[in-house]
Every structure is written in structure tokens, then in C-alpha cells.
Amino acid sequence: LIKSKGGFTFAVYNPNSEKENPAEKAYSLVRAGRANFCVQADYNKGSELYDLTKNVLIEISDKIITAHKTSLEQESIKPPEH
Image (cartoon, rainbow, N blue to C red; front, side, top):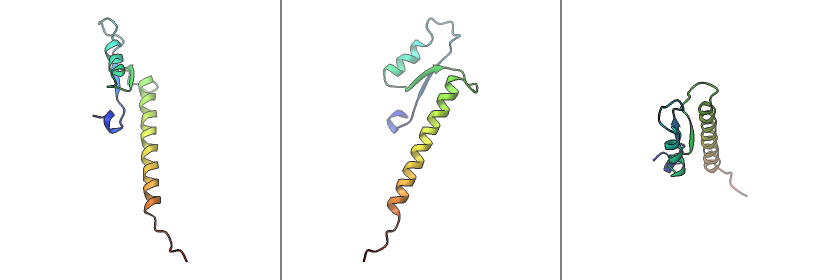
């Protein structure tokens, strides 16, 4: 649902899991188109997940600002032509 509405999804995995190849299930979600990114479940500042999340939020906010500016430009009243 999130991806279908233009959002981004993260498949995270625990690299210290005792399961064989803990990243495989997360990568399979990306291959199946159910997730955009696959990263280790490290939520610390400076981690790959942290930086990726920050960049995605910047991209989303840029899209919102652009859409808002476009909306304002289309709604502005144009002076009459003589």
C-alpha cells in the first residue's frame, strides 16, 4: 500500500541472526517489488539505514514543496490583459 501511494519501504534484517543468510528474506522483498531498500536493522545515527531514511525524507519533502509551489502558481490571479 505504501509503495502504491508513492511512498518508500525498507526491508531490514538482523545481521547477527542465527538464521542462515539473514538478509535473504529482506532482499527477496526488494526483488518482489514489495520494498525499495534492503539494509541492516541498525537504527543508530550514521548507519546506512539512518542515512537512507534521511535522504528519503529529504526527497519526499522536496516533492511536497514542489507540488505546493506549483499549486500556488496555478492558483495565482493573473491581471487582466488590455
